[in-house]
Image (cartoon, rainbow, N blue to C red; front, side, top):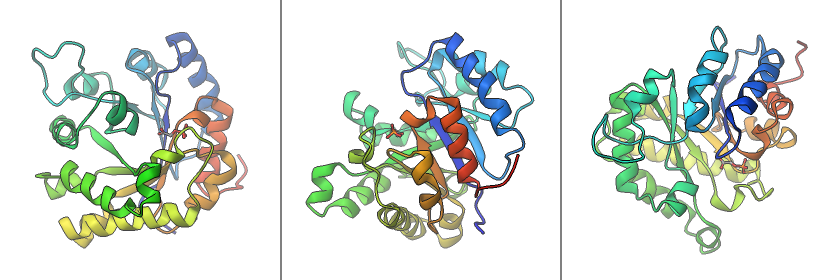
Length: 259
Ligand code: PGA
């Protein structure tokens, strides 16, 4: 039995118009009703956050944004702040996803600022880290994770880090259908937890929740969740269908229980 409450997040990326998002929630809610041993979070595009906050009233399902800016307000054309996201009812925010690191050239320095910006307005970041295929093949997985985490977490307060969610997402496993083996995923998570213990202390490391992300599906979630260090999943493609994602949530919470 894990002490940390598992958290399963649907990262919709740039998918779903508002009407589609509403329809998803109307179908999804009854499927996960009463499932409360895992935290369930939906991360729709910015445009669907406000409508979904309304749809999710009275439900245990929480909302996450997929990114944020580090200042609360100012001359940052096109950006959205943690303060604004909080106003909409977001509880979480994904920060440093590999697609943003790659396509938007986000640096660890910027990610570090964004983490601080999120905590300043009481949003809990879901920080994504992970190695690329060539880095793994060159035996650099651990060095990459360490480099990202040291830079991303620089200067963060212990109390904030204790609330953090970290998603270990090997870049080669994202959207490829190629999931890391449960053992490799666990090794990655284990290394991340040990590094947090090193940077902070053991109690902080034990309270951080570490997800695995990268081609998670109903067929592989149970084996991933059975790993000691894995406290949930960040799910992309398989989260776009409410029936499939509900099945992932159900299996993530351990099982075959009847509803
Ligand atoms: P995937 O995406 O489940 O489609 O591999 C995961 C992610 O990018 O968070």
